[in-house]
Amino acid sequence: MQAIGIENPGSHYRLVMRDIPRPEPGAGEILIKVAGAGLNNADLAQARGFYPPPPGVSQTLGMEVSGVVTALGSGVQDNNFTVTGAKQLGEDINLKQLIDLCLAENSRRMSRYDRRLLRPFAVPALAGLIRRFLR
Image (cartoon, rainbow, N blue to C red; front, side, top):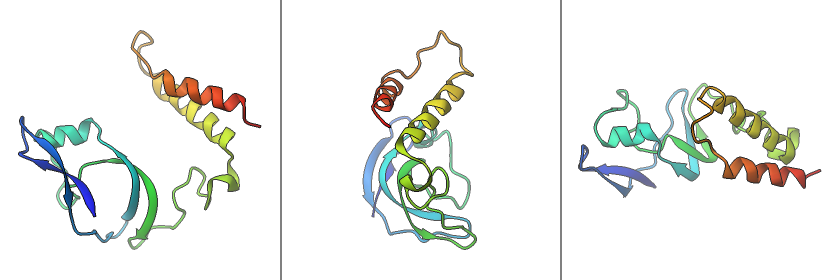
């Protein structure tokens, strides 16, 4: 499988794609077939050498991922991690409800910050526009 690795950790780090063995999930862990991933500030701090992962935790960067759970470690309930625990999106929540949930969560998270700061605009506005055309 491919993963993001760190070449030359520290101030002159470089992120590279590496082939690594497919991990097996341990107790309380899951394995995700990743469809999309992102690097956040903690990942970049790790690359710069300021934020080492805890002992025994994967060294692979990319804390933010989206995908499908393909394997479960012991003690993990199989609910495929949808918003409501449903097996598929349309089962308990429709797209309009999901957009409402996401917009409300965005507002909740942004409410803690000073209103003078720049806030996400494009995606919430686009989601609101799409929501208007959904039944």
